[in-house]
Length: 277
Image 1 (cartoon, rainbow, N blue to C red):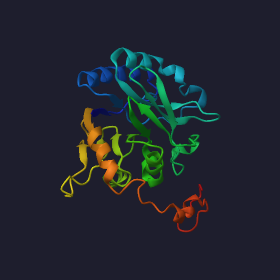
Image 2: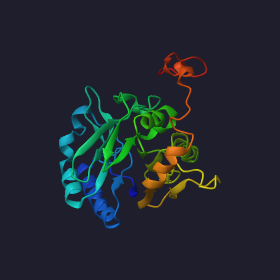
Image 3: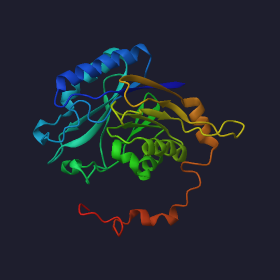
Image 4: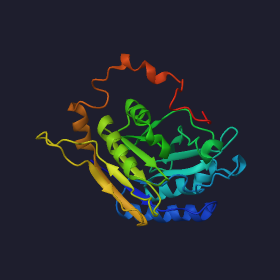
């Protein structure tokens, strides 16, 4: 079974909601022609990454109806991204939409960038996994991927593939981290980032790092350049991934959880104290 992810590398227009939705529908049609199962968008694609948007101007689930209808008509899934209404402030959110146009999951970014403009956003409170046509999908958004705990929790919740809407620059160490997230959790990973100088590099990584002869293999399935705009594709062989997960030693196989209690200690000490925490 091949699960095909279409990864969009493109920058959307700020506050041009209708135009951005038309762009998404265009790429959904293109991805469907290539037999993709799901289209992954960069971070906050519908609204644009515009943190001056107030809570009243942020989107609600009802605003996704055109995309849900299109998903049902075309038979392709979508990870739709937007600033959405929170309780008091907007949230940075990704919706997983099924091929039948159903919203399977709403995930709001847990690790908001509180050292920068995202301090005005309301963070999410939990990592989530959903069943998409028999494939367990988890989502983490941009800065979430800097923390190994994000992918680890998604793995523990059953994720087989982690999809990452992203919008940032200086990608080299972040690509290395995503490859490591795939390796250490035995989860496939795909990331969509807008094109641009020192940006782009949308990517996908397999969790398979050894072949049947126990030889190391490159787990890179996709690595775009920085400035090419458009769709890129990653084919995940779910049969091979599942067989690998059944016998290899990473993921949740030999973890010594009794030694991990310090991970739940919220105290921040030098040298990690910042004025915002």
